[in-house]
Length: 119
Image 1 (cartoon, rainbow, N blue to C red):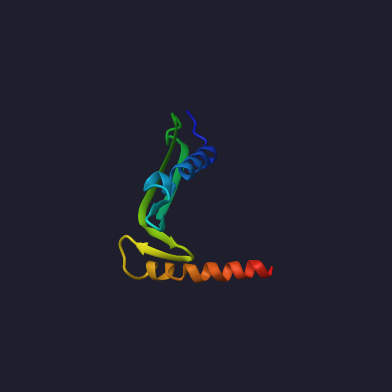
Image 2 (cartoon, rainbow, N blue to C red; image 1 turned 90 degrees about the horizontal axis):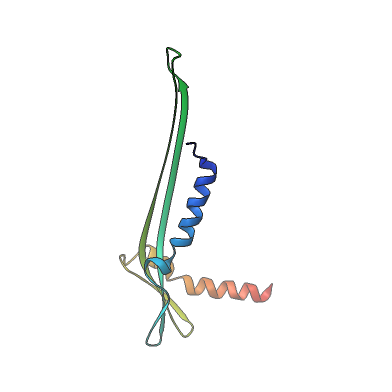
């Protein structure tokens, strides 16, 4: 049986795109009092494939082989939390680094919205 990797890999990728969403991993947006909370995940995936064929040294046989592999990693990293016009990121693991970057999200959104109004 011959496997067409050029067709198989896009099909697997489409399946993972439809399944590897925040909603299927840790849930959907929810309300906690006056706070709107949106779960955030980190997703990584990789694929590899290979194949080959050849003749036996004594010309009495022919061989073919192929293989493929893939992996996916999904990790909840925190929540975007909104209250009125303020947005914050609450990390589930780290107190600095990535969460510090997400602290700037409200300012970036505000600047983006101002640019869109001007355009």
